Image 1 (tube, helix red, strand yellow):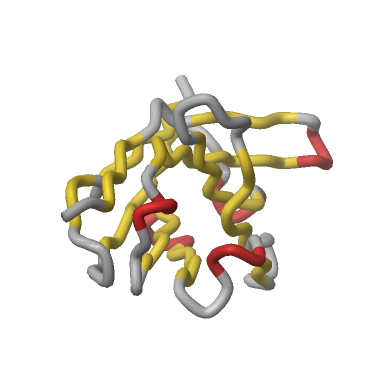
Image 2: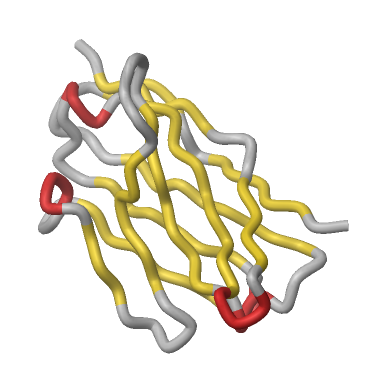
Length: 117
């Protein structure tokens, strides 16, 4: 059974930092591109950052220079380091594992990030 489990969310003040983790099981992690999405109340889910199977990364314009995605294939884990957080970063953050070659995609249950004074 495939599991995708996020952790690390919480409440932080503007300007602060958080690191999200997403650990998977039941898939060959190294064959999956990994991405973080977020969804704020009343908004559509948007991709925040993505790391390919070859470790290339891309970011939404809104987080470039502040967020960093990385993966550890030995631990089946992807991370999202979030610095200089803003109130508008408040959302539920979801982890996504995607293997286009086999048309498979899996989602985690989400972790809440709240940026507030």
